[in-house]
Length: 236
Image (cartoon, rainbow, N blue to C red; front, side, top):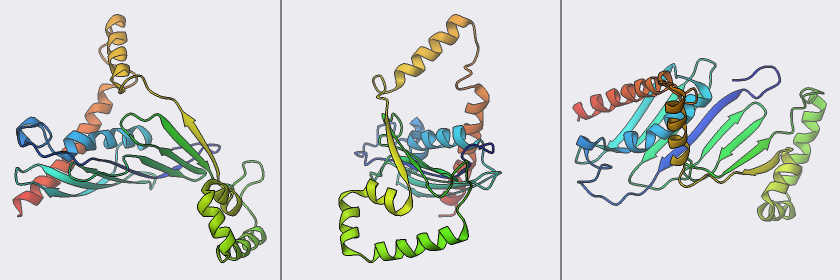
């Protein structure tokens, strides 16, 4: 969400998908051990979208199931109260981009692979909106469209865009890109351990970074998706 000065998030697209070697005894493929794409990987996506958009108002999902009964691949679409959408994909049978794209009124934030422990973000700001001057006029929009049509028909411009994609975005669409790097410590679990220790030392029963209500909300969302999965398997 956002106030009058910030970006209003309109869409989140993300995936955590890896081609995991099949082992019926492993936790990934065993239903008794909480296996399946949703429980093993999808929870990261649901946690991310909850941090950005809060709880969804409507959920739809489709899954592909293995012989053991676990979901090998699950696609999820969620709607939110302010009209935003989240499109998520988790899988243990195919590798995806393992990244997220958060799109809004002023630009995009790209969380790069691996999404579960990223070290790099790309910020893309649209040039069509200026906080001080407001949106472009109709004349400016028409002129820009004419220039854009001419540029797209030019073989030289196409070759330049292939070689310098960020420059092409800047010149043709007014998109400014910047990359932010902040490598994590280890695989990211360090931060969870540090926060648990901080809470224990402070005598706190829950973390303000990840409160209990947040965890319960994510589990409730997962239960709704699992209910759809159960209904699908019962209909087979």
